[in-house]
Amino acid sequence: MPDFPMPSFIAIAACVGIAMLIWDCLEVGRNDAANLVNAVFGARVLSRHKAVMIAAVAVILGATFSAPVMETARKGIFDPTVLTIEKAISIYIAVYFVDTVLLYGFSGFGMPVSTTACLVFELVGAALFLAGPENVQWPKVMKVLSGIILSIVISGIGSFLIMRVFRGAIRDKSKDRATVFLHGPWISGAMLTWLTWFLVFKGLKNVSFVKDLKALTFDVHGPVLVLFFIWAGMTALLSVALILSRQRLNQYLFSATAVLGMICLAFAFGQNDLANAASPGLASLALWQSGSGPTDLADIASKIPIPIWALFGCGLLMALGMFSDYAQRVTRAAINTGSQFDQVTLYAPGWCKAIARGIIRVGERPQSLAPEPSLTSTGKKVHYDALRASVITGVSAGVIAYASGQGIPVSTTYVAFAAVLGSGAADRIFSRGDADTKMGRAIWVVTCWFLAPVVAILAAGTVARIVFHLSAVGIIICILLNLGVRYLFKRRSDRHEQMHHVEPATKEEGI
Image (cartoon, rainbow, N blue to C red; front, side, top):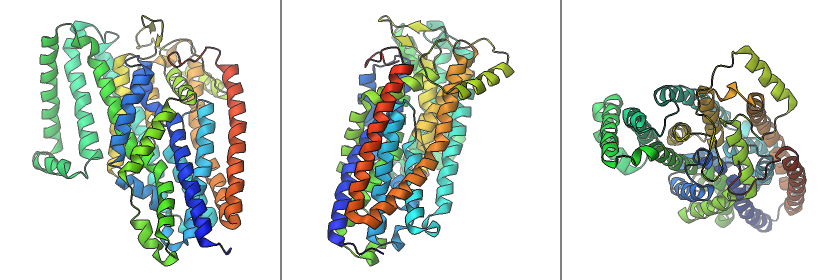
């Protein structure tokens, strides 16, 4: 083992870790957090600026309830208690060196990728290469991996079934007074009920007030009966509100549920992804501040303090990333993939489009159930109606909140993208126009989801060995590699943007 001058190496590594934490939060905002506003922005319920501002507040609040997920990210994937502080801190900062590059590269090409998945597999790679396979908590890794896969399946199938039922009732009349008065209350009541159940009684189940409330209701009368009465009560209240508001509320009922779903999704995101992005840097800082030897590492690993002010600062940094141009690339591509418009501006490799055409030819290309494409009064495309936006945000928020309550870090990006595809398939958006391009893009995105973990494991493992064996020199080498690869990604992604997205992408016309 190399002879590190412990104070200097750990001090340098901790400072680099905090700097990379700041950088990583910006990258999370560019990619993962950008997907929080896709549904309401694509439906033109809110402008991107307003949606980002509201989502940022919800993310910060959600981060304060992220303790179980934070534990998984900082010490659940590998066992730091049997390592020296040098090895543990090398693993933590190696994660950031790789994560910032991966997220930046995917964002530049408009590809939604999971912060959670990247971070988990970076931790696996760094621990595997530096401490050996026996140090990796394989049961926990498999639990996280199965949770991610299961959440994607549930989100996709759930959004498809729910969208098909709701669309069958509403059709394309989501703003028609008679239709909304007939079906709006029970549909919106169902959305509010599942958001209440998943977000409060699953996502916040460890909060003392929620525990007491759950003990008085669900534990006494059973979840089925309580949820039925919640749904019935909300349906009745919304019916009365529609009568009293006359013509006003029916125009904005589903828009309101879409915004509420976005807030819940952002809150759930704060419990998962923001906490995961912050944990390695905060763990590195705690190791430095402890000034302890290897024998005290077990206690440090189990009692790393997570100050609320630090999570608040991370939320602000992520919000800045959400306003960036690269974040708009991710938003534009994700919305166009699930758009009800016939012609879209998207890139998909030829082999992905060929597979898509083969899938489309198998079916009959039935008539689309989505509303006819339309423009706002200012000429902007409305890619979804508010009903579909409500389903996307509601299903995504429910799945993420439930996983957070179980302490499993799942992917907000994967879940939200699956909800876009599932609800789009229910609306039969792949039955007309550039269906092969949209489906080909979806195939390409999912393919990259499987490639990203492989890259994360190999890259993080290599970087961890460089940092550990070369000490401060290794950190400098990795910083230079990070900047160099980042520069390469920027040049290639900017050229890709000019080649494949001919429509100008301004801040408000980013679709």
